[in-house]
Length: 631
Image 1 (tube, rainbow, N blue to C red):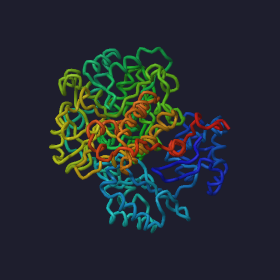
Image 2 (cartoon, rainbow, N blue to C red; image 1 turned 30 degrees about the vertical axis):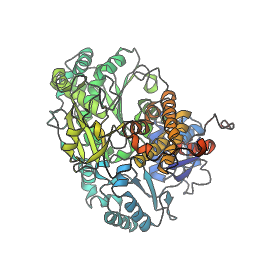
Image 3 (spheres, rainbow, N blue to C red; image 1 turned 45 degrees about the horizontal axis):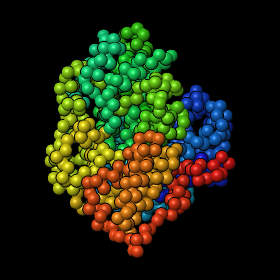
């Protein structure tokens, strides 16, 4: 059970919660009506709690009791969900909640000055709510706007490219009572959902490739798919060489074939649109520019595996796209492209519901995402069984990300050979790269696999780069002597994030930030990830202070190996990568700040202190160290 919710070191809520939720009582029947709107279905718990949070700014103890009664759950089960997600709160938030993006790129582009302005105008510090309940000011990890940082979420509104001047103008307008929507446009209510999205966020398409961002014929892939058998569809996807575009690179056709071969009453298709890796924003662009192509790809997958139901899981930070996606889904139902008898084919029935997340990076892991869709805390599931065998609600489930489904639709349109012939051996087709940091032209580049890092840096105007983070924090940081390497699955694999750093940046500062991110975002289920990453972060702080010994380098390697080998899910298996890859590629950075111990005596960590920090930040107690865990 959570004790304290921490947001990058700022205390924002008390999980005990009973004394803290000083809001007016919710009128009788309103909570019950919200639950009823979602069928009193416990699996829609996240939707229920998000609606309550949006309306009443808080999920009070009495509210949780009423939700539990309506959904036939215990109060503890409801509180477990409410306390897990950072966008839900057991203590009151302001009527206007401002979340400043705290990504490393935002920090390097002026976040500190922007934060100071909001604090000055609103009269509150980060982590506080104004006494009149009007404003809350928080920082939150990457919101997918690294190409136009600093950025912020103001309720459901996105502001980008903030400066101290524009931040002051926005804060003063909000304080004067202007709606957040008017910060985008005075005509906001008259704009279409697509126009609203484009007014808030620049998609920054710098290079449109042949597959996804060039001309795309409407429903060509789906029209071909309805004349094919499920086996023929899967074979085409297999022969194309398409691999999952989220980073792991599992063969898409094989995944679909495994799910299709499972005998079950139901099959599901889920789109993972929870791209939370700092520096990644490619799916944001596809969701805005190619939403029909995405749904087309999901529908083709449904025909291939025999699914009648689909879920589009949209990260909470992309709430500004909710109306656009709902409009697309409704439009497709009206045109016979979703629902019963798609394109007039009897028995081809498939529909999709939109599931909005609530601020949890771990939900990008497919098991945690499925848990979240089921109305549970977003904790990874034990494997085996794999989702293709027993996934959502125990049924065979295909989970792919936005880019993968879009590629599948184009493959069914143009054919497997067309896609296979692009890229390199083992890495076929094109890839969307989201590039940000110290470069002249940040944004989205659709390129065939096989470009070298040097070629990409020249394209984006970053010839002075000293370090490049490939694949976000869980990927690889390389130095100039590795810029000849290729962006492929067999060399430098990436889900799409490319972050450029020039020679003025402090490598250890970047590593410490990434470790703080992993500590904050750990679901806390397993001890190696929950506690081990805190130890790693503290060790990096020791290096930054010049207090490290040469032996501490061995300590970093040994502890990292233990975390990787014993963690339950991909977060823990990759969280030490910022340390391991910089140790390998920037060894001098560590050696120059290390000095031998005096008299051979090595400083040690205060283990209990580190564990206490892990409890708070990971929102969970360790049963190994706490005898009162079950009390």
